[in-house]
Amino acid sequence: MGDAILRAGNPGRSGHALSIRSARDLFAARERLAELFGCADSSRFVFAENATVALNQAIKGVLRPGDHVVTTSVEHNSVMRPLRRMESAGVRVTLAPAGEDGVTEARNVISAFRKETRLVVIVHASNVSGALQPVDAVVAAARRRGILTLIDAAQTAGSLPIDLSSLPVDLLAASGHKGLLGPQGTGFLFVREGVPIVPLIEGGTGSRSESDHQPEFFPDALESGTRNSVGAAGLAVSLSWILRKGVGAIRRGELALVERILHGLSGMPGVTVYGPTDPARRGSAVSFRVEGMDPADVGARLEKRAGVLVRAGLHCSPNGHRVLGTFPAGTVRVSPGPFTTRAEIATFLSALRKVRDPSA
Ligand SMILES: Cc1ncc(COP(=O)(O)O)c(C=O)c1O
Image (cartoon, rainbow, N blue to C red; front, top):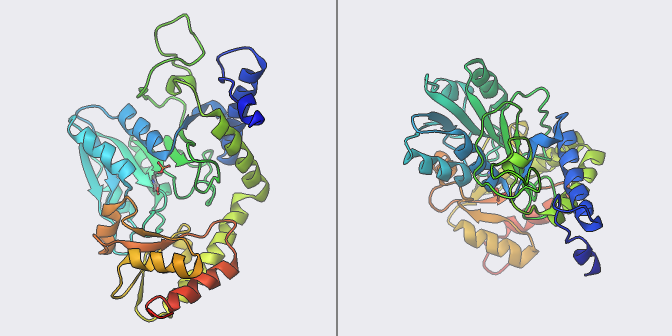
């Protein structure tokens, strides 16, 4: 309790000890984000409440009436809904089709480019099928044409290496509470220097207070109002852990568990697995269905009988499910993280084997 009160100083607003302490927490988290993602300038990382807010800022801050945007048919609603909103403001949207395995071929995205194309938005890994999307090829092709790029890294930040010094993406959004292992209420948008972007929200930044115009320098340009310094303090701790462990090691661990899951599911009667068969073409999510059962019932039984927590349904990505042919009931999704053990995967597989048996 005492510590929570001590941390209540408003970052960047005063010169007193509590304010400075909060500002340091924010700065530490920002610096660690920059280190994790290979960027020399931490001021390009703007804090947001979650990936959704970061994606909205990127999409609505860049697109103008008359612009064209290309995205994929496996995006999350945090991309699709702002894009649909922008359509009513005179923006045209093209969805590049994905294959049945949830992978969008780069050529399908690139062939949708037009001369008015201003932005490409692409998810790094689908949160439905787990399928990795061809971000490198798409970013390279868009850059050659002067088209801005936005990656939704909600499913991959902290789980898959992302190096902004070699991947010339313009904007990248992620949650703090998924693979970055931070508290809910944290997330960020990376904005490369020189990318023209208008803030969604203007207000107090604690800087240039003599002016009634929003500062143009980063991160203040896109950070108005009191920041979540308590969340940032937590995120700074989890980022330190990830930096010590190494994203490569986290990826290897999660991949080994995904392989186990895929191997276990492949031999199970009545179970259909979605997404790429090659685990290396996936993030850390595996979606499946059990013949004759509603995914929600499968999820409920896994929890009740074995304490296994999964997410069932449409995963806020109806399009991702349409591609797999699993709309509207959705799938059951299991997603190992860095603290998931092999024993837990064995428990899950064993519970799933018995899930259709009402007496088990
Ligand atoms: C691919 C993808 N994008 C965006 C989001 C939105 O993330 P947040 O809940 O941090 O807003 C999610 C969350 O599930 C996601 O999986």
